Length: 86
Image 1: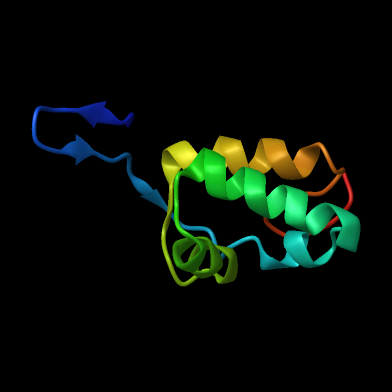
Image 2: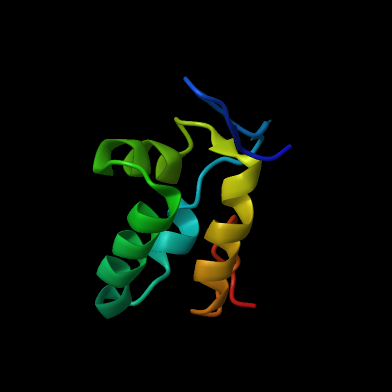
């Protein structure tokens, strides 16, 4: 399901079942964590509070956000969902 905008509201894509990306974020070198955080905030279009909730798995991650998160972490050689090296 994609995001489709109507005149008065945006329809969001389906929620997928991921437990956040805290493991991958924790495996980033310190010098990269702020870069990744800024890029995720920008590309997911979310505030810091929502970012933190998504990171620890308390807020849902939508289907359209999955490829963004995976792409960003893959550039640093990490699986976004378990933090293992790829």
